[in-house]
Amino acid sequence: MNRMTKVRTAGVAAQVASSQIAVAASNYLVLALAARELGTGIAAVSSYYLLINTVGRGLFAAVELETTRAVASAAATGGDVRQARVDALRHTGILLAGAIVLVGASAPLLAAVVGSSGSAIALLAVGSVTMAASYLVRGPLAGTQQYGRYAATFWLEAVVGIGTAAVLTLTDVRSATAWIAVFALSPVVGTLVLLLRSPRVTAALPTDVGPIAPRNSLPELLWSAALLMAGQGAWNLAPVIVNARLGEASAAATGFFAVAVILRAPVLLFPSVQALLLPAITAMVDTGDTAAVRRTTRRLGLLLLAGGAVWLVLAVVLVPTLARVVLAATVIPDPWVLLALAASTVIGAAAQIGQTHLVAARRQSGVALAWISGLLVLLAVGLALAPPMTAATLGQLVGAAVVLVVLDLARRRIPTTGARS
Image 1 (cartoon, rainbow, N blue to C red):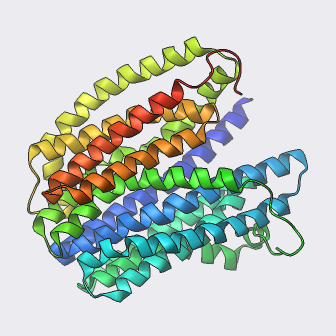
Image 2: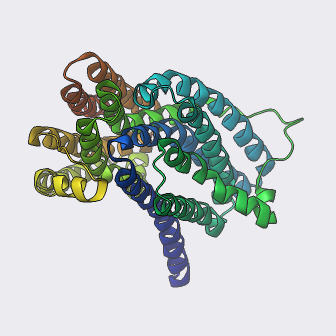
């Protein structure tokens, strides 16, 4: 790879990464502005935000990843690119049907906070559709290396979210439903703008689904979707459970959400960390170099121990102030809650190491089962035990530990000699 190619690759990576960071930052800013307008009414907005990230981003990010791979592979090998695009449309439809079912299943958690507001619950379904549309466009864009337009969809989503929130703040809008609509509608704006203004984007989409039969990639997609959604749920649903069980306008629930959403911030970096580690670990697995895998994971573990210790200290010293200043929390949970939530994030980072090893060995089903197990533990403990805040905290901590253990057991089943099976 020559110098010019390296510079171009670095520029693309920075462009894509910065656009996704912008979306994450805009979401936090919208939540901060909403907290100042709504006070404890932020519980409804926060529950919606966490639920739609679990169901929407969790499911449809899988379509984007699979479509990116399929379109890029077809383009590189002279295969049928149109087939890959048609598959993306079919698979999005399948996952959208699943998303609507999940929306129905999760609606009681939101209804416990918003009461009889059917519009807020309906926006869960709307948000699923807008996210489905946005990720359906992004997959072919990435697969055809239209990275500028790909990044633009995220930048437009971020700008629209912040701009709309600013208008709501300036006009002193105190309707939780209006703030929820920001999260429901902003994902699709970038998609619509690009479709209207760019013929190249429109050309990247499937236009004919008639005579082509879908390829047999649906099982892999479903495993990937299960993995991503369960992973999102493991980090998002504890505050939703607390909101639902403590009821509407609870200062304690608002404080729990504030610290939980700050302490899950490192989770946003997990995909990037995996993307950086995956090529090297894949090469080690392919060549059967188990000693290199062990050496790499040991070094990463030591790094994580040091960083984890710092994170635990920051959880107690800095996070309460951030929760008060940024998210207007008035009631901060006990220090042990902060430590437990921070520890769950550290355990999740450790699990990411094992997950990367399994993905490199093409054991995605094992990764998905691990995260599903952790999510089920969170739901079981969080919904069944009392008091609610203690239950949700322990549910997230134990759930993360279960993920780590299951991943470790799955790693032990990877062949120790030779290449992947």
